[in-house]
Image (cartoon, rainbow, N blue to C red; front, top):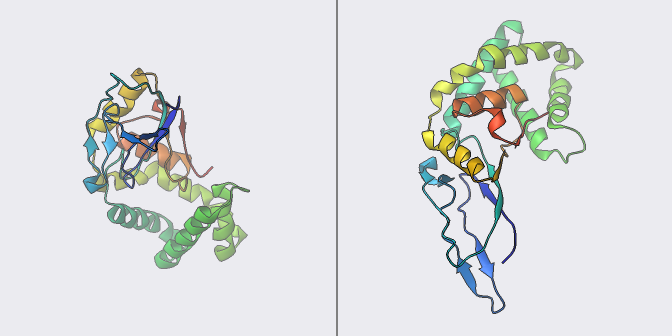
Length: 212
């Protein structure tokens, strides 16, 4: 058996571990260690423990997704509420809502395409200023203010599952390292807020990803 396993938990994956032995024999493990491996259907947490009577294995790290996994939500409703809030915040400062949303989407696509030579923050703002001019950098505090003062209103369209906190805490009690590998397209303050909505804190994870 390999000594280490890396489990990645998200709503888009079904977790299955196999040991491929000499004769290509696949042995399916009964995964019941992670009290909450998420199912795609309605992002429901499954209850699992690991049966190790005849199996020696070592799970070292579990990576969690955030939106739709630890923090249950309908992605479309979340995005609509998010854009509505940030557009309302910036409209009084000369940003036409549709054009702003289009610019944020364009910046998001640049972050997704980013090859890692620059940070996602740089990729976003390079795109944003290409559309609005360098003077748009002077409005960065408005975005930060939105996340500090207005972003919490978006929590209303998200759900809460107490098994999220229970799962993370139990994994840590078992000595398993835990990281939050959410898509790094939000600033740290926005990610920290969403972590809190899930009933967790940034300190619950060794690492959590942000656009910085």
